[in-house]
Image 1: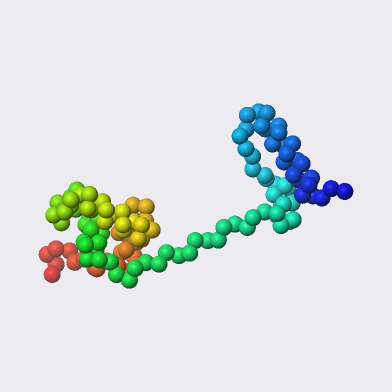
Image 2: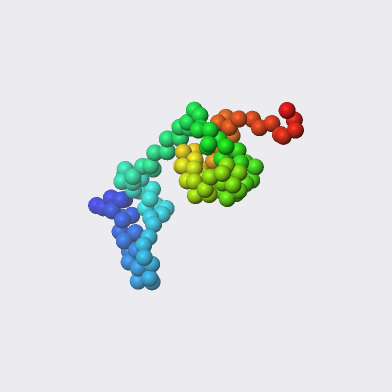
Length: 128
């Protein structure tokens, strides 16, 4: 007597053969086959959720300067001109900050830093 798992695998094998003849390069088990494999404990569990990113307690002053300028909408060359450093240096700092804060863009890094309290409150000029 065959088990449900063996039956599900036979159905999947037949479907794979049929779809392979039609040019498919692979397949994904669905429906009853997946349920049967899961019930039999033959599916891998989902990967564990990534651990939350630990943000630094403080940022270096240069990093704070760069992120504040990014918040103002300046480009890397504009930031470089204002800080009197090369734009490649700004790019290096931006890459470091994106990796450190888990951001995809430098603007997102500035938002993460702001929300985490890593950037000082900025007083608009003329309001001191």
